[in-house]
Length: 557
Image (tube, rainbow, N blue to C red):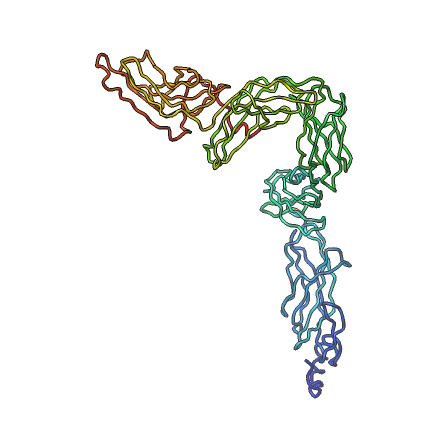
């Protein structure tokens, strides 16, 4: 604050020694508000200092040092910087204390021009006054230690963006990819790629502009950021349908789900062939007529939106055929029941068949409680399919037993039904017992719990965990078997399963064993052993039994 009037004379003498340019007139006036550049009345005069001898010295690719002549009369200094040249917009980047005469500006980009201004400020009571700006002075940082990647390209790819670049260095440790919602930033880290990489997949939302840039880095430091490139991942089409229009063409229809696509790509697969791209369509397309088809051949289609040389997620698949005859009967058919043994929480009823035609529109799996009549639709499957399944929670009862068959169909008609395959999930023979009769004979008995079986199979081994062989195929409703021609003094283990149309076996009964008598010792004691199978997943090796398809294979399809 200004001294009392009676002290000003002595102060003016001091001013003459220090230089009158260091102080403004000590009269009430207005000061400049640095935030809004408006004159603000003050009740006391101000003290201002003008910084001088401003210089900028390049230290490295990432640092420029600023220096100026300081004054003991200043409270501190403010440093301003422009990245748009000497006449560009300046932003304050730092403030120093009264004794400072330099500032190290670090974290800069290589090969970049920076301009600076500095001004002092003086705080007196509640008031702050500012000196005139010194500068500008400009300097350009040294080249970065690595060359920047070039040939930047952001390409949509299904659920994200594949960001590509050219690697211009041979000694980088890796690359940092940054993303922004505008080409001007602000930029945020989006991922890293290893040395020598030239692309990185980054997830991205649909229908939103996303920009990328990449920087090479090493222990010596990073390159300059590449020029950015932007793209928008288009939303994929949905609701694709395919239908024969006439004897020469198939018509496709779908829903356009994007507002940014460049166009649409139509891909087609002929039954038993490879997929080919057959059409590129303009933006907003929702239909296509394929006039290059042949009769009685199933064609499967998918559609994708295109953008900047990339593709959206695909539509659903749709299949159609220009039919002139009804499809052929499926070559075989089997149904299997897979109880949950891996903790997935689901039991599966699975269906397999051979596709004997190339002109079906689809398949219909039918069900009958006993296989002799009353057939109804159970499931349907697309053209060219050879399997499907129904799943049931482990907390539900097993699916109802019965018989199934498959029929191929198209617009002309349908095939004859396939062979029948039957099952009764959860139904097994029980109470199996084995009783030695003499030195060469063991009698088996069990309880028949099946309703639609075509017979029973008896399997035998000389060890409970040994290799089992089929020793008897019996008719429906069988409940006993006389196993003769055995070795004396030998223990035999048995299991029994119901056999259904389609050659499906039920799960096995309990284990039962007996030991034939030795020599002429008689048969006073048969040594019968019965073990209930509490673990239905226990493996049983059976010679001659067909291998079941794996459920994992079906899930992958």
